[in-house]
Length: 339
Image (cartoon, rainbow, N blue to C red):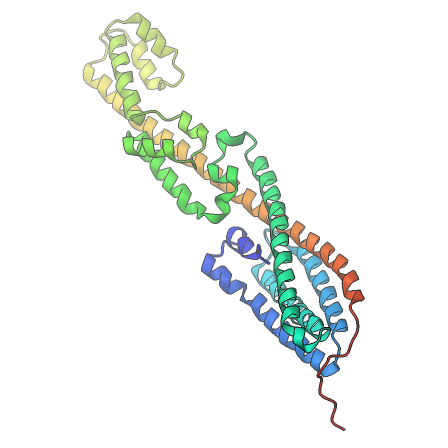
């Protein structure tokens, strides 16, 4: 149950506060199941059949979760299954305490109850740790499939798996703003990107101090030298695959055919187009990375939960053996029926 809010927040897009409200049916189910199980045990005077029925009910619910839970599972169906899970958990929690208290002398009630709670806490700790490794393994597999190029193309949160705790839309919007500013020549944004672990390394390779303006400042000097008669500079520029074609057309023109104003205007237009294109490509790349990351997290968490519920069902199958070993004793202190 510890991983259900994760499914709601990352896969279904529910906020943290809303996920708490969405899990309330689970709590209501536990309360109803616990009270109902206690009332039935008090009425019939025995508890073993109720514990066995609760375990079998949970087995069925966990198998339903395993087979029905998907990324596109309707939220109402998931909430309904939460409620049914609570109904199954409630009787087991209260009736196991009753079973322990019913089997010890009156002066040992406190120690018996505390022992049950202690063992329950130990089991919960071990279970969450083990199932957490299942979650981590599923996330790792799906993130590797989404980013096969490895760390160079993946954000740090994808490499560590902590993206499930972040608002991805807000984080990627921040990165897009930093990238646009760095490409325009903002030195503070450039330094922030270099120090930001979320930025894929592939994006940093295409950045340089000063951004597009600094690149075109150096390019202007080379173009001026080429137009002034530097044949080596002219050949180097014509062979540069990143140089815009309209500038190459100027370089192929006869010397002196174009005035300085036309050259400067062409360079300014080329710089504006390069800045716009570089920003568009950077934003598109980040959006694609965000979409892959969201999909990988959703698939990974859903697959992990399906495995977790399957393992839980197998655990209940094993626990049924011990439930069958419980003595079917009548409850002590039960009032005699009125004749």
